[in-house]
Image (cartoon, rainbow over all chains, first blue to last red; front, top):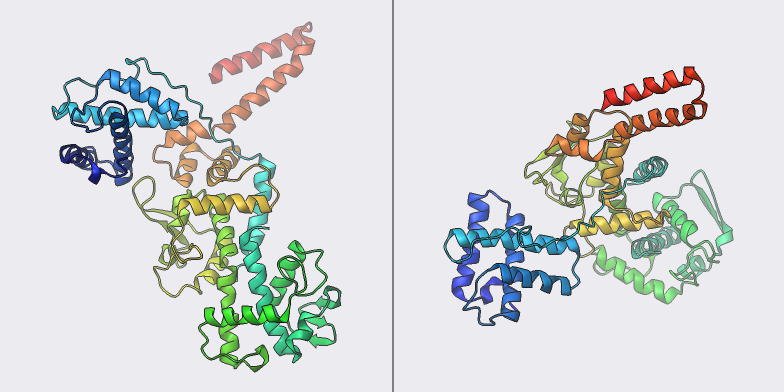
Length: 147
Length: 317
C-alpha cells in the first residue's frame, strides 16, 4: 500500500512535496535527510490508511494517532532506533503541517506524549590494539600484491 | 571459500594453462594431467614435469599462491574448483568464454595457435579477474589507514587520486563538502598500478561484476568477507576500523583536534567524546598505583602518598 507518493490523494501528495521543499530550502537539509523524513511520514500515512481511514480523506495527526502509530510500529518488531527515527520524522512533519494550518492539533513532544523508547545502541567498540596492528600489517603487505 | 576467491582461482588457473601450454609446447591434455607434486619453482624458474621454463609470469605465480592457500589437498597442478581433475572438454568451453571476454573474434582452437596479439589480449584479462580481490584489499586499507566511511570508499573515481600532490579527494562527504586526505606512501604504488587499468579519469575505482559502481553495502560486505578470510571471528566493519584508528591515534597521544581533522569530524567534540582513551588510560595508571599502595595503609609514609594521589585526582577533575 502506498509504496510511493504518486499513489496518494493529490492534496496529501502536495503536502508531502511542500514538506520536502521546506526541509531542503528553508531548513537546508540534504536530499538524503529529506528522503528519510518523507519515508517516515509515508510510514505514518500507511498506518493511518490501515487503521483509521483507508481513503485518507480524514487524514490528520493527533496525540492519540501518534500513540497508536507508536504501538503499531512496536508490533512490527522494528528496532528501537528505527521506531524512534520514525516518530521523530513524523513529529517534524506534524510541526510543518500545523505551521501551514493543515492540521488542527499542535504538535506534542514525544516526552509529553509519555512515549519512551530505551536506547539500546552501544558505542562502536574498537578492535584491541594488537588485532588492529596486525590487520594494518597484513593489509599493507597485501596492497603490495596489486598489479 | 568465497565467490571472489573462487572466480579468481578459476581465471588465473585458465590463464596459467594457456601460458604453460604455449611455453612448454605440450598439448592441453598433457598439461591438465600434470600432478601437483611435479611442480618446482625457484626464483621464478619453473620445472613442471618434463618442462623447464626460465621465467614464470606473475599470473602463474599468483595462481600457485592462490591454489596452495585454498586447495592444499588437490592432487593435480590444475584442478577444478572442487579439487577434482579438470577435463580438457571443460577447459575448451572455458577458453571460448575467455575469448569472448577478451573480445577475440574467430579465435584459434588451441592456446598454441594463438597469435601474440590474441595471447596478450587474454593475459590482459588478469586485472579483470583479480579486480574483485584488489578492490577488497583497497577498501580495507582505506578504512584501516585513513578511516574512510563506506560511502566515501564507494564513491572514489580515478581522478580523485592526485599523485602529484599525494592526496585523495573525497567528494560529497557526510559533512556535505569535498575533503582531502593525504595519500600515504603505502598507497602510492599500488594505486598507480591499479589505475593504469582504468582508461577514463571518471572511471570508478570500485565496481560490481555487472559494471555498476559499488555502494556502501558492497564496501561493508567486502570488508566483512576479508575479515572472515583472515580468520577474525568478530565481523569487521568500516565503522569498527574507523573507531580502531581513532583509538590508536588517541593512545598515541595525538591531540583530539588533530584526530578530529584526520577523521574529518565536523565537530571536534566528536573526537573528544569517542576517543578519550588517553584520559581513561591515565586515570587507570593512577588508580592502579593507588591499588598497589592500599595494602600498606598502616604505614604513615604510604598514607601521605595516598593523599598525594587523591589530591592529584581531584586536581584533574
